[in-house]
Every structure is written in C-alpha cells, then in structure tokens.
Length: 230
Length: 230
Image 1 (cartoon, chains in turn brown, cyan):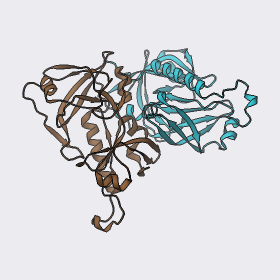
Image 2 (cartoon, chains in turn green, cyan):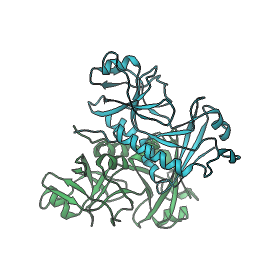
Image 3 (cartoon, rainbow over the protein chains, first blue to last red):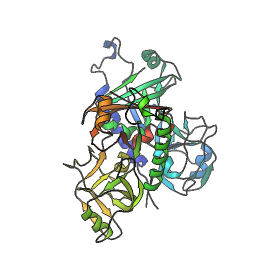
Image 4 (cartoon, one colour):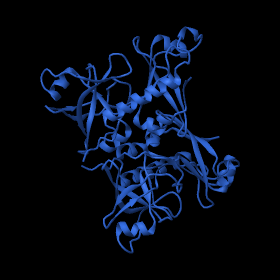
C-alpha cells in the first residue's frame, strides 16, 4: 500500500493555489508600485515545501539512465526553479519507504533530500535541521529511480525555515543575510514561527519556505493575516 | 506496506520520555512546594497527542466482539486515562488506510477519531478543528477492528490545541474555562502557538495537548524553555 501522504503533485497543486490566494490577499491594492511610498518591494508569499529532493546530474543519470535530464512539470515561484516530472522512492533504515518524492530542478552541485520530522519518524531517520547545502554530519538514505539506485551517504535534512530575499527585500526589512525574522500567521491555528532565517540571493524575490509540519501546524490555508516581523 | 508513521506505541513512548524530561526541567527546584510562594500549583507539561480514537462501549464491541473491554497498555498523564492495547485501522474516502491507531480509554459516550492535518491530507478527509465531543458537521470514517467494522458518520476531527486546567491552575494563570492562552516553545525550531484553549475539569492537572504536526513543527523534544502566556 502506498505511503505518499502528500504526494508531490497534489502538494504542488495545493501550493500553487495557496500562492495565488496569498498573492491576491497580500499584494498591494494599487497596480502601480510607484504609488506605494514605503511599501514592501515584493508581496509576502509563504509557500509550503513538501518533501522533495535535489540531485546532481551524475545521480540523476544513475536514477534515470545515461543522458537523463529533468523535465519541467511546473514552474516554482523563484524564476528558473521548477518541479520536475521525475519521481523517486526513498527507503530509510527501517526498510520503510516513501514513494513519489519529487525532484526539483535544475540539477545542483549536490544531492539533498528534504523531509519533514513526520517523515523522519516514519522512516527512522533522525533529521538534522540545516540550511540547504550544509551536509556536514547529515545522515544518508537510499534513493530508488526507474533505472538505478543510490545509497546517498549524506544530505538528508529538515530544511531550516527560511525567507529568500533580494537586496531590496533585505533593505525593506532592515536585515542581512543570515539574520532571523519571525513569521506571524493569524487564523484559527495561529502560530508565530521564530527563527526564520534570511537567505540572500541577488536574483530571488521575497518568499518564505516552511515545511509540511509547519504548514499543517498553522493551517496556512486558513490564515487571515501573514506578517514577517523582527 | 504499513503506514503507521507514528504508531501509537512508539509515540506514546516518546511522549512518556518527553514528559519525564520536561518534568525534570520544569519542576520547581525545591521539593517542598510550600516554599514556593507564588509558583504554579502544577508543573507545565506539554504532551503530543498522536492520532488516536475514543470509542463507545457499543462500538468497542462491534470492533472487538461482544463483551470486549479496553485493556490498559500504559497510563496517561491525567489520572484514570490510559492508552489501551486495542488498535484499529481507519480507512478514508480515497481508500487509503492508516493501521495501528490506538484507542484511548476509558470508553466514552461518543466515538471520536483525532487526526493531524498530515493524516487528513493523506486520507482525503477535510478535518474540522474542534474541541473533543463537538461533532456537529464533522466528517465520518470507516474503522476496522479484528471482529467487525464501523462506518462512523461523524466524529473525525483535528483537536483544537488546548490546556487542561483545574481551578487552582486557572486561578494561577488568571483564566477561565474557554479562554485562550499562548504556548511559547523556545529552541532551534521555536514557535509561539496562539489560541491554546483552556479546558476546565475539577480532576485534571495542568497539561497542554498539541498534535504531531504541532509537536514536529516546534520540535518539542529540542525545546529549551516552555511557557504558557496570556
């Protein structure tokens, strides 16, 4: 019996929906941003990252065969990022598996599996809380594709909740790369998330990423107001 | 393949461990409570409720056979409450199932299934946020036991996060039944939970209940400080 509690496709669709609703709710009413004197440079968008992985080209070819490439299923919010059509199965040390884990593209210089603590407990993996790419002392996992398998020796993490910001966004919030903000979600399951890490990149636009445990804890879909605060 | 992401037994054991650690961390250093002039009447204990159910005697006998009784596996924190040895399987509208869902005893005047949103998404049940026993307009679910099955027509909920309090506890925090407090969890995944409902009963002692999504979102096991605030 399949385990895909929040299979990539469904979750991505939910994310897309949430994103659109939030965009409508949170975008400045004026279409002319020049008329907003002290408003934020970008609307505050919060997305829930379902379990997913990033792969190197080499690992992709082991899993999907020589010359394999990631094919786009859907664009993500950040330009150039996409949910691919490629799905794999991860198998933990208790011989439990989660099928239909989606690869996000494009390929990276490392292979990384991002899971929730709910997933980690199920699989029997004690997940460290990490920023993407920080793989020192992280556990591994087995990854099965249609053409081959990898025994990744590291790179399995719970992603630390974070907010992607450009220079404009950091200036607006008065923060710098690596600082922490709080994310306040009002609603029937209201939560104030502490320790939302600021991650700078010149080409991103403002976007908070939380995982499914966090998104379900606060019932993001029922949020009545969302704020980033210092 | 089994789905029991956080099977009753394991989670109960984890809860027991967390409870013991928290008791040690949070209990007043003095063994003589009379020496604590303005201290709380009871230590603040936060427990994670994994998915579970409560059943009527009638439903228990359908699931486990005529004359069946709940047998105790482990005492819970509130006197008289216990995790039973009886496990059932719940089956949702998408024909997905979660096995090994534990019944908590003693039997009640209603049958109720308490799930996380993560479970609800997996099963395809849109869970309403409710206080125990409030079953108006709640969905149903199929429940399978070793001797029979029930098609419960209602009573499937996400339990609203809450704190059990006696009169002493309410006096200490300056609240009354039905009020809301905030629960602040400090640590690497720090969270301030808004809307923790006060639930009075003369025979309970202070205990906060959150679900597995909430417990995993804040990584309760790594908490460095826990407070209930107004």
